[in-house]
Image (cartoon, rainbow, N blue to C red; front, side, top):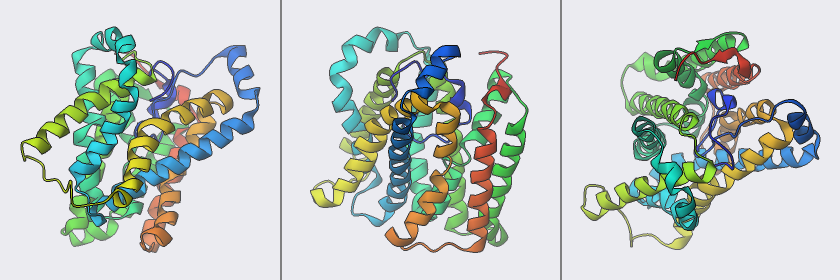
Length: 335
């Protein structure tokens, strides 16, 4: 997914179906929260619809990389390069904050939201479908966030989130049913890569929650090193590129959806939505991403939906909604 205007430590992040770069700011408490939610809530819903459209476009663009003349490295340059260039003038004001981030949290952010995540998601998307990308990356993110929270930080999961996570797990099995029956084929390997990407996103989420950076600092920390790494790999020939073999019109969808949309705009619209309508409502609306991506892929990419895929998407979407009904059910016992 995921670049917001506040400290990246929100409890909502633990179960948000976020896509790059979606990092929820802290939810206001008490009268401040009530005032923020009550102030023209329709603007919050509008901002969340914009965010949902960008997240859906991100999912479709991940799938479309394999069908485009661009190499994954070319799209990575756009994904990390455009936000880095847009936010670079703000680096001096965030430099001391970025330097203060612990090394392990830097590693979690760069691995979970940077090149390892990007290439796992793009390779998995090339071998599967938009429905699988939407359901297995943002859809299963709450499952991996919860599991990593238990393993790394001794968090506990209770309340409606347990049911939600169980439904997500069932949805994953439904999506993988055909591939698991065959026990071979690119679809199975692609699905495994998408689950790896979702696990990396869970790692990214926990890293951001503990980084203590605002939205701009988070994006700078993610995009600048990732851009440097992919540029070096392309320059040395370690990653293949198609630069010079495609036109601006072919790159434009990735510029809009990956670089500007997911890299810059969605972060601020999601933050605005959280302030106006609350983290819970925002996250539940965001949970529609897998289903919406699957529906849009039908006319845009010509990808049909079978009954098993529909069942899997429905289970995962329902699971994410249940997981988002009780943000307070995850309590951290350690950092």
